[in-house]
Image (cartoon, rainbow, N blue to C red):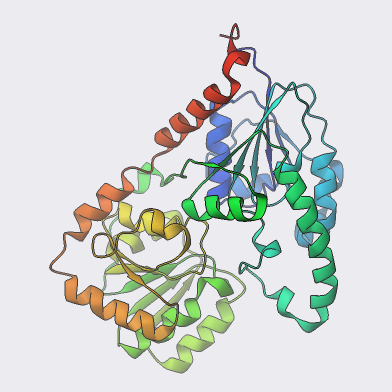
Length: 380
């Protein structure tokens, strides 16, 4: 593929998460490709080894200080930005999108492959980090805006030649909202090898970790553990941190709110926990349970969303049918009844072993080669 001109497009590069880990892995396959994005915060990737030396192209207006702080209020502008990108000089365009990047325009002489992390959650009724759409003074204007954005989003989703996604859950959403098929290429674990030998955190505790948002249901995990008298450590930051800390104090259970933890601390917590709990609603994929499994730790998960791609009840996880605290209480008790009867460590490690960056990159490149077909002939 020596002479193949490739461009990569991603929604925002202002935080490092699962989507950014995926787009970095794609960029590693095409290190000469420029990356177009609506936001770029280089500091957000310090210490991650991601996008080192990458040619990241961002609009001039996005460099203004207020934009990064209020970027969510500029949502109506992003479709226009991506639609008006001039990508005419490229043979292959790869977009990575949970929002608007898939809407770039290409010609019939180009191939556009889009990795869809999810159709925009806020447009299709899935819970998000904030509850702004539930506020009475936001409902009417946002309903009007969302109506037009959904129409745009559907049209934008028809533009890529081929769609790739991360889970059965998202594949089904793509079929439902866009009427299109997608090939599943699951994401991968990205734990720094230097932390593999980190000592486990001492104690007899359950662990909940992630962004502290409403739909992650930490407000159900805390009372459930308090009710059954189990020690719980909650790691992460987010809008709900103060509310969750107050809840934990009011219940007087053995809950420790850790706030932000480093990657090394996170590994230590995974290694030391009794089991990992994640009952987020409608997860697109859900990487944290796989991280826990990597260290041999079973999970208590909601029977929902992307968890179902890798979670097996009674094998590497306990699956519960409701995010209500009562359901989780029963799940904890069921796990403990099976704790000594199942080889959790072996099963969990075997599950996680299949989610490597090498596997992801191999499968992704097989699709690229297949879809480009004769266009690659003579390009090396």
